[in-house]
Every structure is written in C-alpha cells, then in structure tokens.
Amino acid sequence: MWQTLKIEWMKVKNYRTFWILLIITIVSIPAFNYSIYDFGNNSFPKVRGQSLFGSPFAFPDVWPMVTWVSSLLFIIPAILIITLTTNEFTYRTHRQNIIDGWSRKQFIYVKIFEVLLLSILTTLVVFLTCLFFGSVLNKAPDGVSIFKNIQYLFYYFVQMLSYSSIAFLLSMFIRRAGLSMGIFFIYMVMEQFIVALMRNKYHQDWVNYLPEEVNDKLIPSVFERLVTSPDAKKNWENHIPIFLGLAALYLIIYYVVTTWRFRKADL
Image (cartoon, helix red, strand yellow):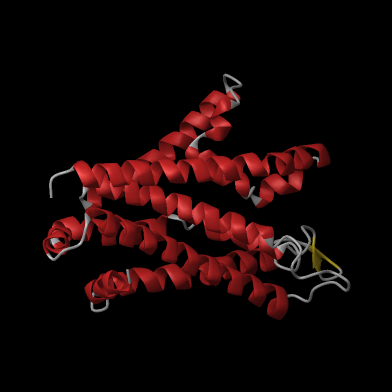
C-alpha cells in the first residue's frame, strides 16, 4: 500500500492544476466564512453592540455556523476529485499502473484513499476555522464549553466524504472531466428540484432520504435553525442516527458499484 501511495504522489507532486485546486479548497473555507462574518457584522442593526441575530460565530454556535457555510463549497473538492480521477483515463496512467503489476482492486483502493484524505483535510481546515472565529474574533461567554456542538464537525466530514464519493463514482463511469463535472452539477440541482417539488406540492416525505438530502439534513441552514421550533429540533436530533446510517449505506453502495465497474470495464 505504501508503494502505491508513493506512486500516486509522484503523479501529482508536479501537477500545477492539483496544487491550484488544493489551495483554492483550503483558502476558500476560511475566506468564505470571513466574508459571511464580515457581512453579518456590518450589515445588520445592533443593540448595545450586539447583532439582533446574536453571535453565530462565537462558541458554541460557531460549530454549526462554520460547518454549514463551509458545506456550501462542496463543489470545489468535488472538482478536485473529478480532475484527479479522470486524468487517470485521459493520460492512460491507470493502464500503466495495471501493466506495472497493480491489481485493479489496489488502484480503486488508492483512489478511495485520496477521497478520504481530502475529506479529512477539509474537515481539519473547518476545525481550525471554527477555533479561529470562536477564540480570536469572538469571546466565548463565561461558562460555555468550546466543544459544545462539536459533533457538527463530524457531520461535515460525512457530508464531504459523501459528495466527493459521488464525484468519484461519476468520474469512474464517465472518465471525462468536463462531462463528469457537468453531470455532477446537474444531479445536485435536479435532486434539489425533485425534493422541493415532491415535498411542497405532493407532501412526500420519502425524498428526505435521497442521497444529497440526507447530507443536507445533517447540518440545517442557519436560517432553518432560527425558525425551527423546539419540537422540530428534537425531531431532527432523533433522526440524526437515521441520516448517518443512510449516509453510510450510500457510501457502501458508491464504492461497491465503483469497484465493480472498474473491475469489469476495459482498460
């Protein structure tokens, strides 16, 4: 496994597009959060120096706030995964790896590790961003634990792993970067359209368990949290194990299908 990872590193270490996309992924998270923070801090009326909407970037609210804002950027790591995966087919490096002695299973496992590693990296950046906003820009109220609501960080990791895995699945099937990105974006938009239509017009609840919607349910938007009643919040908390379980099930399906596809497809 270590040898295959070294070969993967050789593929990307001098690849400029990889580094550009990686830097954009890392920088965009704190930058986008700071933009939202600055806008909220300067655009809404204040009473005795405090915003009418409270301090969403202070502990403990910083965890759900930053993870939700950061989740809006899921398209950037997805593009990086699509680029890295489709390059294997564009430059025939996947074929060369097999000729050099890799098994097809080894190739898939290395690519899955890349998806996992990127999800861990973005989660780490979100963690540091939360600490920055909560500790540097905002003073935590006395007696408030900075780790309250930290479970949202795990929800964010599950989200990023799921979105990146969908991107990986499409890349392995389509094998072309532009088309994969286009279908990925269309799928995300179409599922949201179906969810809105079926839920609002036909009052169907099964759409809450579609792949993208399961991820979105893990971290409700800041606006949704403001208007959610205590009973609705309790109901959401009770459904978290279901959403996590379905997210795990979808991940298993993605990787089983992807592995099957690559093992059966022509090189």
